[in-house]
Image 1: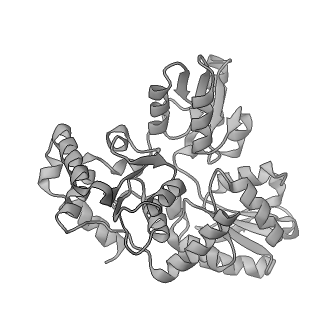
Image 2: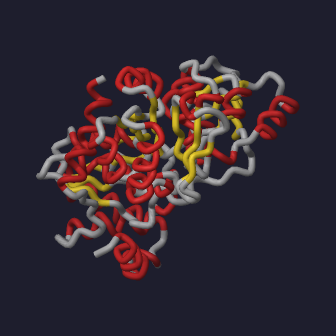
Length: 366
């Protein structure tokens, strides 16, 4: 069954008892299911999950961290409260005795969807015509298993927002140029930190099937895939200017998935873990404007009442696809396991998983 058909089936078939139950009833169902499943169950919850879901997580973290934690447990059932590519990574790293489930198959990632395997293979062939065998592909972990597999097959590696700089240093020792998928902003910000000028970066547009670069192709060092995070791209220079005007003594900290000009104007930039650590370790009375997903910002506000914290963009919405995971779908997912008819299992083809694991392990071995 195709993913689209699975999604359609999932949307239409959630039983009425879950859709019509109150939050209190759903919470009781989830608590009961967790008790019944005991150590056979592990619920990883991504930082961007809303409070109603994250309260039931056995661990919370970023995508790769949670996939690794899942694989290192003895749990047979991993109910991943995140998005599709995260569950795929958990399945790739877990063993044959473990099964991974996504409570709602509609929980995807717009960034990951901006680079599919057909687009990538076409782009690779075109780039080989231009640059020859001088390019190493690398992909953000926020990508599909198929893209990770492609990168692994061609000698490349995955990166996280925490380790992108070190992994990119390694990559430049392998080849003259890099193709960075699928987030152009993380790729641009990381390369810039390593001293590569914006004039040495080209952009591949998968829709127009065109390489954008003004100058001699011989000068290209990094080829950025034209993709982005729909949340982080909505933080703007105007947002930074407004905070500077209204709160001149406030620190601005942003995720490197933000645009280059926003990162350049901010005081700090780093991964989700970096942002959390900076806030939690800051002295009492510190003031922060945070440029990342709203559910996490709200949680940081709640958990750090001694600090003044706002969102860099006050009109920002939470990650809509991440918010597909809710109490009804979590309760349904857990009950289906207890009933012996689990739903929405995420499985990655063995050949794809093999090469994807190569890409992941190259990163982890660094």
